[in-house]
Image (tube, rainbow, N blue to C red):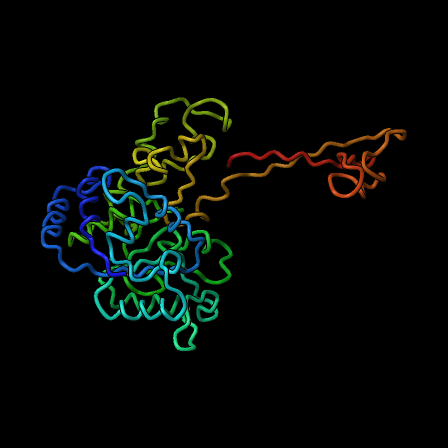
Length: 347
């Protein structure tokens, strides 16, 4: 796709405050807009992931720049390769990737990188009969990239695919390639976080990173510090009452991101605003270091059935009952059976 960046730069300048861009970067963007210099191409690879970060980016809507992701990707930046969003497929798509890799490009990777079985649990494309693994592609392309972006927590730290027991030995993009990355975590990553980081790179400004290689302007403060529930009394039962959710498992005190002020889905809401807990999805070690989110507690009661009591839906062993194929009614336990009472509690 041979496309220009002028509208993308205009969008970034017009939305500088919302994107968290410092004034120095805005000035460089204005100079870049005036010069209209050639734009490094973007190669986006999907490794072991659910494509959630692409879906999140596709939810980008704005009144001050590109109207939506189609406008952004087709009319504003040079996206050379993205297997989900590009029109080309097969050999034509691979040819575009190989051509783009000969010049200057930004490498964006979504998903963790499996190393088990020489990476053969995750194949990205075929080149002249050779099946190219995510491990091979990332190791090769990262070496010559102008910058490597790890999009989402899976690419940044391993994420859910790399959680215990991790049978395919999934690691971060940085660990797989040996190249330093700019991590834009989140499960999924917020579209503004992606756009803001790319805007700074277009301005020739590498964003200041924190100890987890995240842009500090986006992940510099704990969620709890800016949560509107911070000063409220703590609640002890989720879904009942309005208040701080820390006692019922909220990880906002351990999580750095600007979700409380940026919000999601075009500023509609965010996790805690919807009454849920923060699960620390932007942090290194998610999900293992913050799990289990919920705790199952079992208790038992002894059910005694009178001899004349009928079993609804079938014989007294429960066969043929329930909603399956029998009488369509609820299944009644046998006399003396132990009935589990399961309570789902927040950790």
